[in-house]
Length: 159
Image 1 (spheres, rainbow, N blue to C red):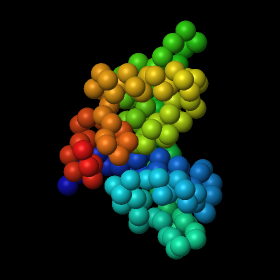
Image 2 (cartoon, one colour):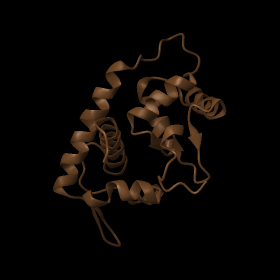
Image 3 (cartoon, rainbow, N blue to C red):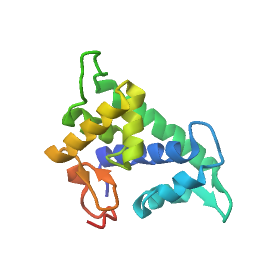
Image 4 (cartoon, rainbow, N blue to C red):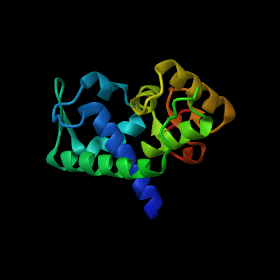
């Protein structure tokens, strides 16, 4: 049985994945983005997605799940410090905090988008992510999935 903290993390992850595939308001998804998800990520959003060979659609329950996930991510952001003008790079801890907000598991593109939306430049974000991996604050799997180290257990990782 999952504790409340784990439920919140999964809610944020589900919201981030649905937002990535469907955007903030669409019911038709981006097929390329859906295909880019790992098997683990597809299982997370599977109950809320309907698809055939040509279309990826968000069910009514999926629209609600996306909204709940977005609210959960917004609430989790309340404790985060925004980047200051003098910040040269996001620190490894700041990178890990942002990864935590989107559920603790992400592809590089989603994590980078999260950081650039907050105001860091793309190049600084990319270097910050590399440093977070080097320091061990986040882990990079062979399939390019990034995750918080404590989430290693049974998440479908192939490393």
